[in-house]
Picture (cartoon, rainbow, N blue to C red):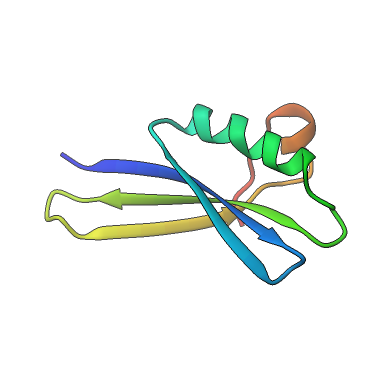
Length: 80
């Protein structure tokens, strides 16, 4: 059985990454992403999602994506 760990990636000033998490569910992560975003300068900073899934073979698979601007307004998630 595979297990997924959900993270928020903060990028401050466009150059300083920070990893927040892991969270057990996407919903937990999404709530944190919204909080992180409120503390950021939208002109310089960024908020991204990251999933790390450990497969049955024990190997990790990593997926990262961006949130749409609408996500922070109405919970809509968009992955690039």
